Image (cartoon, rainbow, N blue to C red; front, side, top):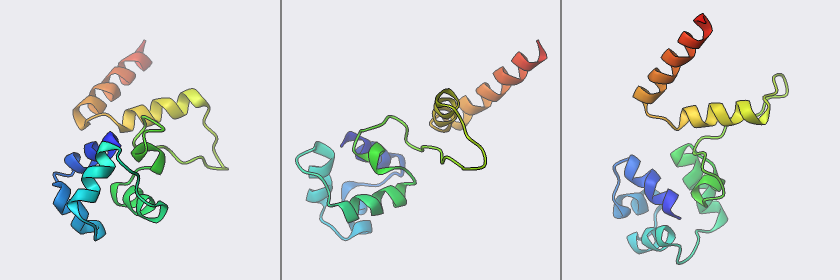
Length: 108
């Protein structure tokens, strides 16, 4: 579960600090990150909520850390979903470059 490690490090937390958030020992966080064993479903849901991501991302079933929600009012095709999800995974500086690039494409 290397994505759990990425999420934890992105928040600047140690394994011990993350364990304290969920009321579990540092050793459990380490075991989850190493893939020794997986957290129970309820804990996995709490982690996804805490990090603002999906359980699939934590479990490495997707590379998209923040999947978009499908609305019944407005449907996006797979390419549009991919573009939006990829954009959300960029740093703020990278997002700004994308906005600049898109605006320059529209001018042509």
